[in-house]
Amino acid sequence: MIIHATFAEAWHKNGLYVKIHDVPATLSGRILRLQENVPSLDDHSEIIGDTVSRTTYKNPPSFELDDEVPDTERIGEAIRQLPVVSDLNSELHFSKGCLSEREVDNLLKVKGGPHLVELLRRTEESKLVFLRYLEHSSIIFFGSSIAEYRRLFIEFTDAIIFLHSNGIVHRDLAVRNLLVSNDRQHLILCDLESQYGSNFCPEIAQARDENLPESEIPYSKKSDVFCFGTTVADFILANNVRTLWQYTGNFVPPAPFDRILQVCIRRDPVDRPTMLQVRKMLESIVDPDQ
Image 1 (cartoon, rainbow, N blue to C red):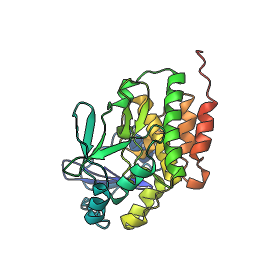
Image 2 (image 1 turned 135 degrees about the vertical axis):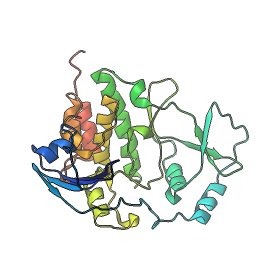
Image 3 (image 1 turned 180 degrees about the vertical axis):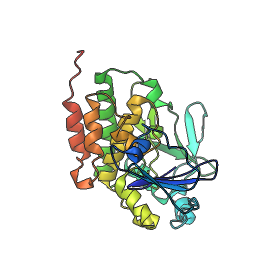
């Protein structure tokens, strides 16, 4: 399924193509919110509201993002400036290749920042070296108290606020990029490539619908705010959604975090809070069990 700004496209195993528009409180709206199944179809179809009509077949996209080719020479130059690790320990360290021109610059710029993965050194093969942390953060903290989730999300906001204060937009905030400290007490935000991001954010989806080159996609602090909200929902519910519209349907975290999601995923970026405002909202949350 491909998510667009106001509709989704799906290619079924039987070869049928289906285009489904978001019209809330109708058949198509319920399908996009996974509250109802796609009806039995015998031809390529378009579903708008409660109306199902035939349409022409469309080939699926190729997903080639080749307009922003990394400058491998510049990446190599940046990496070569790093000291080489002399005692790489696979139990303590994690190494990875660098695929983005921005990654090394970002990592050096925010070195020592709160709850952010820290670049240590490089290997002889020019891989980046980090401390090894725990994965599956949403599973590790599943079923936590309101107070604990509040604490963790404040850590998450602090990491993003620090990035933004240094002129960095993360672009790809997601549960998979939240690691856990080895004492299982803290979140660590990783993946500072600042490269590709989710289509779930409306202005990003709209730009891709307009076939803008990746270099012109309007990633911003407010698109990070949007993805912070969806990550909060994914983290608490320990699951991944298939469509953007589930966040306004059956995939909403319980109170008081539902309000955080709602304000963060407002359609117009101007209407979304800043991360500092989100932090203040989190600070105001009171755990009724305490």
